[in-house]
Amino acid sequence: MENPIEKPIQESIQESIQESIQESIQESIQESVQESVQESIQEKNFETNLETNLKILIKLKCHNLNFQTLQSMVDHAIIIHKNKINMKIFYENNNFYSKTTNISLRSFYIYEYYKNNNIELPKINSNNIMLSKKKQDILDIFYRVTNNNTYLLYLVMRISNFNIAQNIVKELEKGDYTKEAVNVIDTKNACNFIDTKEESKCYNDDSVKDNEFIDVGEYFLDSMVPTIKKKHHGYQSTINFFEICDKTTKLINKKINMDIDNIIVKKKFIDIKHDLTDKLGGNKGTMEREVSTLLKVYKKPHFPILLSINKKELDVYLTYCGVPLDNSNVPQNWKEQLLEIIKLLKESNVSSNDMWQNNFLIHNNIIFLVDFGWSSNEHYYPYINITNNDINNYQSIFELLDHVFERVVQDRIIFEHKQLQ
Image 1: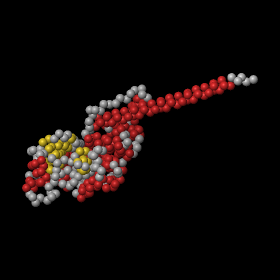
Image 2: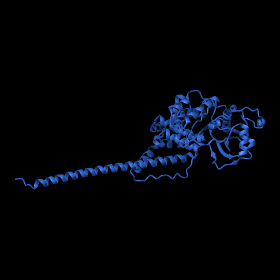
Image 3: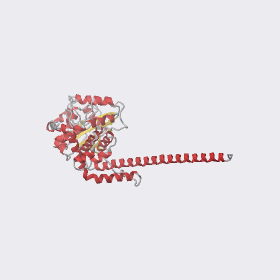
Image 4: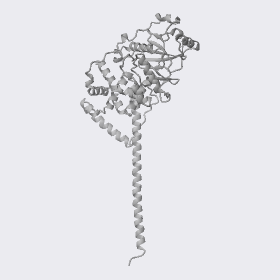
């Protein structure tokens, strides 16, 4: 006969076992989820710190590079990224892989050690690491167009690796290197400098045409005062800002029939040691191309106005055009303004060839294109020119500028190779 007490006890035991199993399963799931989340957080923190550190190390390397070399390294890295080149194969083909095997294995184990939180990956202090805006801009462009491929750029920036990267791109574009060599810009005849002594009669000639250049240096050169604005050191020039009094400003306005600010920009073209720049005329060639274009766009909107030329000291004096373009100051009608700039350049028979982010300034909500050291009357090195179609295809000015910079990377590399071989 069945014991009436035994059945409830068995049911109670069964329920207890099931509850225990469910709790155990639930705890196991929670622990697994927590471990997974924790690992994910650790790996994400590691990746973030590693990327941050690599960017800082790249900054440090940039200090010892001139801008032309940095741009060439960035260009090669972009080509390698776009073509998804297998760097392992690259090393093997160049007999470098055997030398890096142990280093690669060591790096892998260090990576795993960090990732599993056996060692914390420290953050490098970057407070004292400053780059010129020009260098920082080109790094930012690389990070945007390659989705932060910091590993690749850091690898390419090692001098021995850069030589390998150059060989890779040469192999990739071997067919293009067999084309006829590109002619070097004729800097000797790029511009006949205006002799301010011979042209001094313009200062007192009321019959001067509206767009004929008038050198007004005699009115401000001896009286301008340095401003607190920061001095800019570019790759081929330095920029200083000076202030002139209201009386002098009004006098200049009357002479050139234009209204200018009371800030004068002095641009000095400096001598640099770089093979490609030397082949294209050095600092004198750069100044000739700049002056030639400034005369063509003289007093036209969206460009600096040339105020004075000092051929002997390689100086030009220009009107103030504002601050660098960034996310905080993009005009709402930027497309219309860029279309007008393109139209004015075409009417003036000018190809800027260097229309990248660093060369756009904003003043009173107006876009200014500056720096014409690479300009000519045709599409030429470094080939960075915006077209009407480009403007219509992009809703962000920075995406547009990144695209224009990236699409001519190959052209720049081919040109440099032909000029320096």
